[in-house]
Amino acid sequence: MTGQAKISVIIPVYQVGPYLNRCLASVCGQTETDMEILCVYTRSTDGTLEKLRAWADRDARVRILRRDDGGLGGARNVGLDHARGRYIAFVDSDDWLEPDMLEILHRALTEHAAQIAECGFRNIYRDHVKDESHGTAACVEGTCFEALESLIDWGRFKPVVWNKLYAREVIGGLRFPENCLSEDEFTTYKIFYNADQLVYVDVSKYNYDRTREDSLTAQPFREGQLDACFAMREQFYFFEEHHIDALREKMLSHYAWVLLDRLERAHRARLSGPKLRGVLNMVKQDAPLFDAASEIPPDAKRRLALLAKLRMGAFALFRLRGLLSEKKAVLKHWLERKSSQNEEG
Image (spheres, helix red, strand yellow):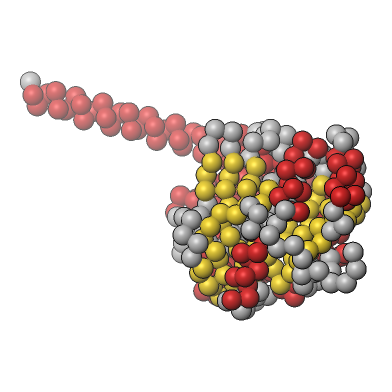
Protein backbone atom coordinates (compact mmCIF):
# COMPACT_ATOMS: atom_id res chain seq x y z
CA MET A 1 0.00 0.00 0.00
CA THR A 2 1.42 3.40 -0.99
CA GLY A 3 0.44 7.01 -0.35
CA GLN A 4 -1.57 8.44 2.50
CA ALA A 5 -4.63 6.64 3.81
CA LYS A 6 -7.56 8.54 5.26
CA ILE A 7 -7.50 6.57 8.53
CA SER A 8 -4.78 4.62 10.32
CA VAL A 9 -6.27 1.96 12.57
CA ILE A 10 -3.77 0.83 15.22
CA ILE A 11 -4.31 -2.61 16.79
CA PRO A 12 -1.93 -4.03 19.44
CA VAL A 13 -1.85 -7.80 19.03
CA TYR A 14 -0.67 -10.21 21.74
CA GLN A 15 -2.02 -13.67 22.69
CA VAL A 16 -5.43 -13.10 21.12
CA GLY A 17 -5.68 -16.13 18.85
CA PRO A 18 -9.34 -16.91 19.71
CA TYR A 19 -10.46 -13.28 19.23
CA LEU A 20 -8.34 -11.87 16.41
CA ASN A 21 -10.50 -12.99 13.48
CA ARG A 22 -13.56 -11.32 14.99
CA CYS A 23 -11.66 -8.07 15.50
CA LEU A 24 -10.03 -7.92 12.07
CA ALA A 25 -13.22 -8.96 10.28
CA SER A 26 -14.98 -5.98 11.90
CA VAL A 27 -12.18 -3.56 10.95
CA CYS A 28 -11.64 -4.82 7.41
CA GLY A 29 -15.42 -4.86 6.90
CA GLN A 30 -15.91 -1.16 7.70
CA THR A 31 -18.09 0.84 5.33
CA GLU A 32 -15.27 3.40 5.35
CA THR A 33 -12.66 1.59 3.27
CA ASP A 34 -9.89 4.19 2.90
CA MET A 35 -7.62 3.02 5.70
CA GLU A 36 -4.46 1.23 6.68
CA ILE A 37 -4.64 -1.36 9.46
CA LEU A 38 -1.48 -1.45 11.56
CA CYS A 39 -1.30 -4.65 13.61
CA VAL A 40 1.50 -4.31 16.14
CA TYR A 41 2.46 -7.87 17.00
CA THR A 42 4.22 -8.99 20.19
CA ARG A 43 5.52 -12.56 20.28
CA SER A 44 2.64 -14.94 21.08
CA THR A 45 2.28 -18.71 21.47
CA ASP A 46 -1.36 -19.26 20.52
CA GLY A 47 -1.33 -19.06 16.74
CA THR A 48 -1.86 -15.31 16.66
CA LEU A 49 0.91 -14.67 14.11
CA GLU A 50 -0.41 -17.25 11.66
CA LYS A 51 -3.84 -15.62 11.74
CA LEU A 52 -2.30 -12.20 11.27
CA ARG A 53 -0.37 -13.37 8.21
CA ALA A 54 -3.52 -14.87 6.71
CA TRP A 55 -5.30 -11.52 7.05
CA ALA A 56 -2.34 -9.65 5.56
CA ASP A 57 -2.37 -12.03 2.58
CA ARG A 58 -6.06 -11.47 1.86
CA ASP A 59 -6.24 -7.69 2.56
CA ALA A 60 -3.43 -5.39 1.41
CA ARG A 61 -4.47 -2.76 3.98
CA VAL A 62 -3.26 -4.99 6.84
CA ARG A 63 0.36 -4.36 7.82
CA ILE A 64 2.21 -6.37 10.48
CA LEU A 65 4.61 -4.44 12.70
CA ARG A 66 6.65 -6.13 15.41
CA ARG A 67 7.25 -5.10 18.99
CA ASP A 68 9.33 -7.04 21.51
CA ASP A 69 8.09 -5.38 24.69
CA GLY A 70 6.46 -2.27 26.08
CA GLY A 71 2.98 -3.52 26.77
CA LEU A 72 -0.17 -2.04 25.27
CA GLY A 73 1.18 1.50 25.39
CA GLY A 74 4.40 0.53 23.65
CA ALA A 75 2.50 -1.24 20.87
CA ARG A 76 0.32 1.80 20.27
CA ASN A 77 3.44 3.95 20.10
CA VAL A 78 4.90 1.75 17.36
CA GLY A 79 1.66 2.13 15.44
CA LEU A 80 1.75 5.92 15.82
CA ASP A 81 5.36 6.03 14.62
CA HIS A 82 4.38 4.19 11.40
CA ALA A 83 0.93 5.69 10.82
CA ARG A 84 0.38 7.55 7.54
CA GLY A 85 -3.30 8.40 7.89
CA ARG A 86 -4.85 11.83 8.30
CA TYR A 87 -6.92 10.37 11.14
CA ILE A 88 -6.05 7.85 13.86
CA ALA A 89 -8.19 5.16 15.51
CA PHE A 90 -7.22 2.62 18.18
CA VAL A 91 -8.81 -0.81 18.51
CA ASP A 92 -8.01 -3.50 21.08
CA SER A 93 -7.62 -6.89 19.42
CA ASP A 94 -10.16 -8.71 21.59
CA ASP A 95 -12.88 -6.13 20.82
CA TRP A 96 -14.83 -5.44 17.64
CA LEU A 97 -16.51 -2.59 15.78
CA GLU A 98 -19.93 -2.14 14.26
CA PRO A 99 -19.57 -1.93 10.45
CA ASP A 100 -20.23 1.82 10.17
CA MET A 101 -18.32 3.08 13.22
CA LEU A 102 -15.46 4.79 11.37
CA GLU A 103 -17.75 6.24 8.70
CA ILE A 104 -20.01 7.76 11.36
CA LEU A 105 -17.10 9.21 13.34
CA HIS A 106 -15.43 10.65 10.23
CA ARG A 107 -18.70 12.27 9.16
CA ALA A 108 -19.13 13.76 12.65
CA LEU A 109 -15.61 15.20 12.52
CA THR A 110 -16.17 16.92 9.20
CA GLU A 111 -19.73 18.13 9.82
CA HIS A 112 -18.86 19.62 13.22
CA ALA A 113 -15.36 20.88 12.38
CA ALA A 114 -14.01 18.80 15.26
CA GLN A 115 -10.64 17.19 15.86
CA ILE A 116 -11.93 14.30 17.98
CA ALA A 117 -15.14 12.31 17.44
CA GLU A 118 -16.34 9.80 20.01
CA CYS A 119 -19.17 7.27 20.07
CA GLY A 120 -20.71 5.17 22.81
CA PHE A 121 -19.77 1.55 23.45
CA ARG A 122 -21.18 -1.67 24.79
CA ASN A 123 -19.65 -3.61 27.68
CA ILE A 124 -20.06 -7.26 26.74
CA TYR A 125 -20.31 -9.52 29.80
CA ARG A 126 -21.02 -13.23 29.87
CA ASP A 127 -24.59 -12.83 31.10
CA HIS A 128 -25.55 -9.31 30.02
CA VAL A 129 -24.64 -6.26 27.96
CA LYS A 130 -24.25 -2.79 29.44
CA ASP A 131 -24.68 0.02 26.92
CA GLU A 132 -22.82 3.28 27.55
CA SER A 133 -25.06 5.32 25.23
CA HIS A 134 -28.77 6.15 25.05
CA GLY A 135 -28.88 5.25 21.36
CA THR A 136 -30.36 8.58 20.20
CA ALA A 137 -27.66 9.11 17.52
CA ALA A 138 -27.61 12.79 18.54
CA CYS A 139 -24.33 14.66 18.07
CA VAL A 140 -23.19 16.75 21.03
CA GLU A 141 -20.36 19.22 20.57
CA GLY A 142 -17.90 19.99 23.33
CA THR A 143 -15.01 22.34 23.89
CA CYS A 144 -11.69 21.18 25.26
CA PHE A 145 -12.71 22.35 28.75
CA GLU A 146 -16.11 20.62 28.58
CA ALA A 147 -14.48 17.40 27.43
CA LEU A 148 -11.92 17.48 30.27
CA GLU A 149 -14.69 17.96 32.83
CA SER A 150 -16.69 15.13 31.25
CA LEU A 151 -13.59 12.92 31.38
CA ILE A 152 -13.35 13.40 35.15
CA ASP A 153 -17.08 12.71 35.59
CA TRP A 154 -17.15 9.68 33.22
CA GLY A 155 -19.60 11.62 31.09
CA ARG A 156 -19.96 11.72 27.31
CA PHE A 157 -16.25 12.16 26.69
CA LYS A 158 -14.41 9.32 28.41
CA PRO A 159 -10.71 8.64 29.14
CA VAL A 160 -10.56 5.43 27.06
CA VAL A 161 -8.82 5.88 23.69
CA TRP A 162 -10.50 3.20 21.59
CA ASN A 163 -14.02 4.56 20.88
CA LYS A 164 -12.73 7.64 19.06
CA LEU A 165 -11.39 9.00 15.79
CA TYR A 166 -8.63 11.61 16.09
CA ALA A 167 -7.31 14.17 13.68
CA ARG A 168 -3.63 13.36 13.49
CA GLU A 169 -2.48 16.78 14.71
CA VAL A 170 -4.11 16.52 18.16
CA ILE A 171 -1.93 13.50 18.93
CA GLY A 172 1.19 14.92 17.32
CA GLY A 173 4.23 13.76 19.27
CA LEU A 174 2.28 12.53 22.30
CA ARG A 175 2.97 8.91 23.18
CA PHE A 176 1.66 6.38 25.69
CA PRO A 177 3.68 5.29 28.73
CA GLU A 178 5.19 1.85 28.25
CA ASN A 179 5.02 -1.23 30.48
CA CYS A 180 2.30 0.11 32.73
CA LEU A 181 -1.44 -0.14 33.19
CA SER A 182 -3.87 2.79 32.92
CA GLU A 183 -1.99 4.00 29.85
CA ASP A 184 -5.18 5.70 28.61
CA GLU A 185 -5.45 7.69 31.84
CA PHE A 186 -1.94 9.04 31.32
CA THR A 187 -2.65 10.17 27.77
CA THR A 188 -6.25 10.93 26.75
CA TYR A 189 -6.57 14.20 28.69
CA LYS A 190 -3.47 15.55 26.94
CA ILE A 191 -5.00 14.75 23.56
CA PHE A 192 -8.26 16.43 24.63
CA TYR A 193 -6.29 19.50 25.66
CA ASN A 194 -4.91 19.79 22.11
CA ALA A 195 -8.38 19.86 20.52
CA ASP A 196 -10.44 22.98 19.88
CA GLN A 197 -13.66 21.04 19.29
CA LEU A 198 -14.89 17.53 20.08
CA VAL A 199 -18.12 15.81 19.14
CA TYR A 200 -19.89 12.90 20.80
CA VAL A 201 -22.26 10.68 18.78
CA ASP A 202 -24.83 9.08 21.07
CA VAL A 203 -24.84 5.58 19.64
CA SER A 204 -22.77 2.55 20.62
CA LYS A 205 -20.53 1.39 17.80
CA TYR A 206 -17.64 -0.18 19.75
CA ASN A 207 -17.96 -3.55 21.51
CA TYR A 208 -15.76 -3.94 24.59
CA ASP A 209 -15.28 -7.61 25.47
CA ARG A 210 -15.33 -8.17 29.23
CA THR A 211 -15.77 -11.94 29.06
CA ARG A 212 -12.09 -12.91 28.92
CA GLU A 213 -10.90 -14.45 32.18
CA ASP A 214 -7.26 -13.94 31.14
CA SER A 215 -7.63 -10.26 30.21
CA LEU A 216 -5.85 -7.52 32.16
CA THR A 217 -9.11 -6.16 33.59
CA ALA A 218 -10.35 -9.61 34.70
CA GLN A 219 -7.30 -10.56 36.77
CA PRO A 220 -7.11 -10.15 40.59
CA PHE A 221 -5.91 -6.78 41.85
CA ARG A 222 -2.15 -6.44 41.54
CA GLU A 223 0.47 -3.79 42.05
CA GLY A 224 0.36 -2.58 38.45
CA GLN A 225 -3.19 -1.33 38.99
CA LEU A 226 -1.75 1.32 41.28
CA ASP A 227 -0.57 3.02 38.07
CA ALA A 228 -3.95 4.77 38.03
CA CYS A 229 -2.85 6.73 41.12
CA PHE A 230 0.24 8.03 39.33
CA ALA A 231 -1.90 8.91 36.30
CA MET A 232 -4.38 10.91 38.40
CA ARG A 233 -1.59 12.81 40.13
CA GLU A 234 0.03 13.61 36.81
CA GLN A 235 -3.31 14.82 35.46
CA PHE A 236 -3.90 17.06 38.48
CA TYR A 237 -0.49 18.70 38.12
CA PHE A 238 -1.04 19.05 34.37
CA PHE A 239 -4.17 21.06 35.16
CA GLU A 240 -2.15 23.15 37.61
CA GLU A 241 0.61 23.77 35.08
CA HIS A 242 -1.84 24.78 32.35
CA HIS A 243 -3.98 26.91 34.71
CA ILE A 244 -7.19 24.93 34.24
CA ASP A 245 -8.33 26.49 37.49
CA ALA A 246 -12.07 25.84 37.10
CA LEU A 247 -11.45 22.08 37.29
CA ARG A 248 -8.82 22.15 40.02
CA GLU A 249 -11.01 21.14 42.97
CA LYS A 250 -12.93 18.53 41.00
CA MET A 251 -9.71 16.95 39.72
CA LEU A 252 -8.13 16.99 43.17
CA SER A 253 -11.21 15.27 44.61
CA HIS A 254 -11.08 12.65 41.86
CA TYR A 255 -7.37 12.07 42.50
CA ALA A 256 -8.08 11.58 46.22
CA TRP A 257 -10.91 9.14 45.48
CA VAL A 258 -8.68 7.03 43.21
CA LEU A 259 -5.95 6.96 45.88
CA LEU A 260 -8.32 5.72 48.57
CA ASP A 261 -9.96 3.18 46.26
CA ARG A 262 -6.68 1.67 45.01
CA LEU A 263 -5.03 1.62 48.43
CA GLU A 264 -8.08 -0.12 49.90
CA ARG A 265 -7.82 -2.77 47.19
CA ALA A 266 -4.07 -3.10 47.73
CA HIS A 267 -4.69 -3.62 51.44
CA ARG A 268 -7.27 -6.34 50.78
CA ALA A 269 -4.88 -8.06 48.35
CA ARG A 270 -2.02 -7.75 50.89
CA LEU A 271 0.22 -6.15 48.29
CA SER A 272 3.66 -4.68 48.81
CA GLY A 273 6.35 -3.37 46.51
CA PRO A 274 7.90 -0.24 45.05
CA LYS A 275 4.72 1.08 43.43
CA LEU A 276 2.82 0.82 46.68
CA ARG A 277 5.61 2.72 48.45
CA GLY A 278 5.51 5.32 45.69
CA VAL A 279 1.77 5.84 46.09
CA LEU A 280 2.08 6.19 49.87
CA ASN A 281 4.82 8.76 49.37
CA MET A 282 2.47 10.67 47.05
CA VAL A 283 -0.19 10.69 49.76
CA LYS A 284 2.31 12.16 52.21
CA GLN A 285 3.54 14.80 49.76
CA ASP A 286 0.06 15.91 48.74
CA ALA A 287 -1.53 15.71 52.21
CA PRO A 288 -1.66 19.54 52.58
CA LEU A 289 -3.53 19.80 49.26
CA PHE A 290 -6.12 17.25 50.34
CA ASP A 291 -6.59 18.89 53.71
CA ALA A 292 -7.33 22.28 52.11
CA ALA A 293 -9.60 20.93 49.34
CA SER A 294 -13.21 22.03 49.47
CA GLU A 295 -14.71 19.09 47.52
CA ILE A 296 -13.11 16.23 49.48
CA PRO A 297 -15.47 14.94 52.21
CA PRO A 298 -14.21 15.21 55.83
CA ASP A 299 -14.04 11.44 56.33
CA ALA A 300 -11.92 11.05 53.19
CA LYS A 301 -9.61 13.81 54.43
CA ARG A 302 -9.19 12.01 57.75
CA ARG A 303 -8.36 8.76 55.98
CA LEU A 304 -5.80 10.43 53.74
CA ALA A 305 -4.21 12.17 56.74
CA LEU A 306 -3.89 8.86 58.58
CA LEU A 307 -2.42 7.18 55.50
CA ALA A 308 0.12 10.00 55.25
CA LYS A 309 1.20 9.35 58.86
CA LEU A 310 0.69 5.62 59.38
CA ARG A 311 0.98 4.33 55.79
CA MET A 312 -0.75 0.96 55.34
CA GLY A 313 -0.97 0.59 59.11
CA ALA A 314 -3.82 3.10 58.90
CA PHE A 315 -6.11 0.35 57.67
CA ALA A 316 -6.00 -1.36 61.07
CA LEU A 317 -7.30 1.87 62.56
CA PHE A 318 -9.96 2.18 59.86
CA ARG A 319 -11.14 -1.33 60.72
CA LEU A 320 -11.19 -0.61 64.45
CA ARG A 321 -13.16 2.56 63.87
CA GLY A 322 -15.59 0.65 61.68
CA LEU A 323 -16.12 -2.00 64.35
CA LEU A 324 -16.65 0.62 67.04
CA SER A 325 -19.09 2.49 64.84
CA GLU A 326 -20.98 -0.72 64.15
CA LYS A 327 -21.13 -1.58 67.86
CA LYS A 328 -22.36 1.95 68.67
CA ALA A 329 -25.12 1.56 66.10
CA VAL A 330 -26.17 -1.81 67.57
CA LEU A 331 -26.12 -0.39 71.13
CA LYS A 332 -28.16 2.63 70.06
CA HIS A 333 -30.74 0.39 68.41
CA TRP A 334 -30.91 -1.82 71.52
CA LEU A 335 -31.34 1.16 73.86
CA GLU A 336 -34.08 2.65 71.67
CA ARG A 337 -35.85 -0.68 71.62
CA LYS A 338 -35.61 -1.07 75.41
CA SER A 339 -36.89 2.46 75.88
CA SER A 340 -39.84 1.76 73.60
CA GLN A 341 -40.63 -1.47 75.51
CA ASN A 342 -40.49 0.36 78.85
CA GLU A 343 -42.86 3.04 77.59
CA GLU A 344 -45.31 0.39 76.38
CA GLY A 345 -45.05 -1.38 79.75
